[in-house]
Image (cartoon, rainbow, N blue to C red; front, side):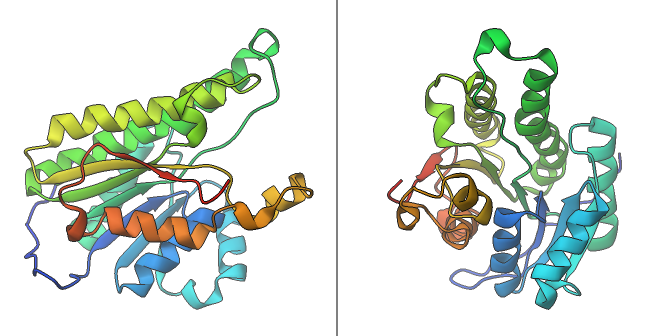
Length: 249
């Protein structure tokens, strides 16, 4: 894999346009994060796995359709991650920010009844994808001496819960992986942090939990603000953190 270098000049107190890669950027949270970075004037590319993800994104975010680059990638396969990062670098020259949002949820199944395929699905989608994307991108960022990464863990990653073994383990793994990576790159000019959402206020969550007090949940747009802050130069002193974004849930 060819790695390109070239440090961006940083202007104190000013936002310098950056190149941002968002995995899972076509989903509800991904769309909010994409909007937030585009509002700052950043160049944004998002990964997708199925064509209908792109069509859905364009339908609900028509104002972004021409401003976002879509990159096909199965981020659970190392060769595909490397290919996607190289494609990003070929188009934009350098990668400043990586946000790992790809993930999923399997719950309500006791461990003794949990099929191996479901366990592997959670580990690959929630944890392996983050590992592979960070591993690939960090080679570029550390060579340049600059980069920002935010991984999406979850409140459930703090402790095990009945019926959520695979989800809790995979999201807990994201948190500890973030801490390990941050320790490895702390002297390289790269920051690696994580956020831990609880229940987000999305249409799917409202539909599945209609009797809950939805106003206590955190909006995806507010989570996006936290992510943008963690990848800003104002947050340069934050490294290896797992930031709760629970709202009042």
